Length: 208
Image 1 (cartoon, helix red, strand yellow):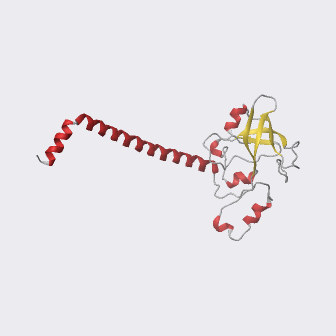
Image 2: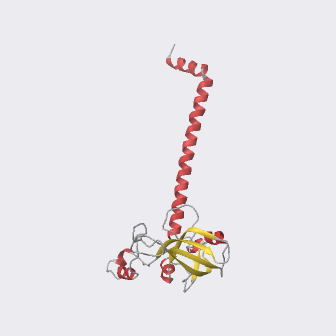
């Protein structure tokens, strides 16, 4: 008997087993292909989300402590700056706790930013300025959690800056925070950088 005939008879005799094997392999290939497509789609969506929240940010100079605001102007005045960058702006960033003064709303792990007009000009965001004085601009997610709107008075509590780490013997553990009373001027939507974040995270951004 020729080899071809033997193979054909073998396939026809064990057709149930062979069919199950073919279906199993086809299913596995489909699942793997789907997983790869979904994975690429998720990565693309996350990348787009992160880039949207970064605005026009290209590079960031970070410090665990505070440095001079004048550093931004010093970098701008460098002869090589115009060749590589279009602009620069200083930003203060600390985590904080926010609560409504006359209500039950509160939120922890809030991104607290100190910005002025230079921040919005740097990112090319029109119709947004400041804030000034005791005004605050908040993200949509924070507004929903606090049930806050324009004119709501909120309390923003942040850790007081210190040169002595709190965990050391001489750290002032009795005076670790400062609370600032502010009034919500507006809720900044996502498309106007209301969810600005330097952190690569998928969840909603609660920021003030």
